[in-house]
Length: 161
Image (tube, rainbow, N blue to C red):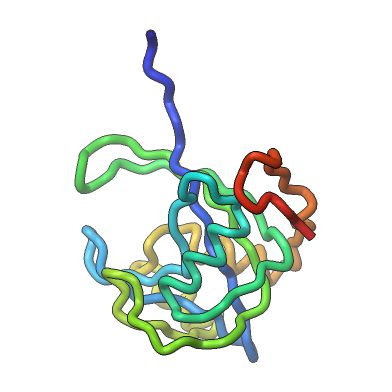
């Protein structure tokens, strides 16, 4: 039996309010970095379910995805394992909802609202180049309907708008 290569599937929420973008500041193996609310797809989740869960865990806010901004592939060598890692990131935009009084996920220091100019000025502190690229695509108006995504009915809650 041969090894099967599998990329890591991640989701991210691109949330804009009054010209500012919601980011998280987090501890990483590379130091303190900025990222969108983002994380890995868990077993038995749909992509929209994953972005809702990650946003809640990292910002303590409800999030309702309304559109897919883009699908991004990136590769880099992990500082922790020295192995090449490939990520497929599905970036969503949507509506930020209620805030809950709950602790943020492990490693998340705080949430931050930044303008595009502020975000652009601190690129060396981004978790990856995709942080800025997703915001640029959002600002360029890139949107795809959630109906573009399909999950077989045996995936928990596979219902899209």
